Amino acid sequence: MDMNKLQDFMGKLVVDLGGAALAANIQIGDELGLYKAMADNEPVTPAQLAKKTGCNARLVREWLSAQAAAGYIEHQEGTFRLPEEQAMALAVEDSPVFVAGGIGAMASMFIDKDKIVAAMRGNGALPWGDHHPCLFRGTERFFRPGYKAHLVAEWLPALDGVVARLQAGAKVADVGCGHGASTVIMAQAFPKSRFHGYDYHAPSIDVARQRASQGGVAERTSFAQAAAKSFDGKDFDLICFFDCLHDMGDPVGAARHAWQALKPGGTVMLVEPFAGDSLEQNCNPVGRLFYAASTCICTPNSLSQEVGLALGAQAGEAQLRRVFLEAGFETFRRATETPFNLILEARK
Ligand SMILES: C[S@@+](CC[C@H](N)C(=O)[O-])C[C@H]1O[C@@H](n2cnc3c(N)ncnc32)[C@H](O)[C@@H]1O
Image (cartoon, rainbow, N blue to C red; front, side, top):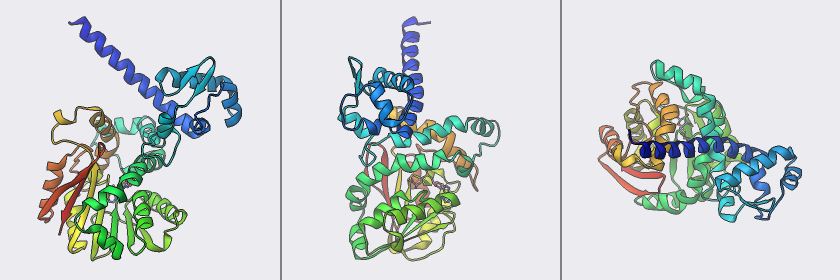
């Protein structure tokens, strides 16, 4: 045995275990407003932060110490300061790199651990709706900053002729819309178009309706509980799947239904987690995050549905292309990408 290799591996594990413990502390900081109370980048003592947020001063000091040890917060002579860059990720809800809100999705993996263990010992199935509700809100907050930063500015313009149609007035479906983050962002940007969100999880559809009202787009959106293979409606100009196709049991059936529901010349926008086509290509920080979440959330959900294809969150472009060609689409291309997403276009 190589003792140096063992030591290196133990070092890596300590970093990872610290990350897992830190994740709980990020969620706590987000929920208690501790990061937001430090978003002015001014130094603060534990007692001052505790007073500002109505929290226990001794526990706030311990929380701040953990943040300092992790390099999230700066520490000097008994005061703590959240630098501007870290505030973007941890405190500023509307920033393109805000991640603190998505921690709820990570937390569900711990909370639902017994159900995941049972699925792994059994047929692999764990439906989306059987998770703790922190997953649904966490997923919305995890993906929304990326959609807000890229969807209207980069992803839609990367599709052939779609922005012109949206500006003129198009009929759009957002399949597997969850809490409707993407639906609302598109509806706000294109007032002449109509947006129809579908998800098979009824509580998410209720929240999506609330989000549309809060976002001032209730009159140009509609939401319905429906599975991807059977939602109503025809003659769509654009059908979108945001970070959900790989979660479905029968993605070929979903793509086939989209083909039937599209107008001739219509477009599917498929947004999927960034991935290469092989495990080797995905052995990196983004791949480990998505494979780990996929083990506990995405793949068990697919296995809980008809067909149970179980693409996983690192399906990669080649597998996704096969799904769309099998469903009847003739063109399929990578329109654009970010470090976290592949944006793929299929045309009817
Ligand atoms: C990871 S979440 C993404 C939600 C949303 N698109 C977003 O980006 O925030 C996956 C969503 O797919 C939905 N879903 C899974 N299987 C489905 C199916 N067969 N038909 C419709 N929706 C489905 C789940 O209910 C869940 O809301």
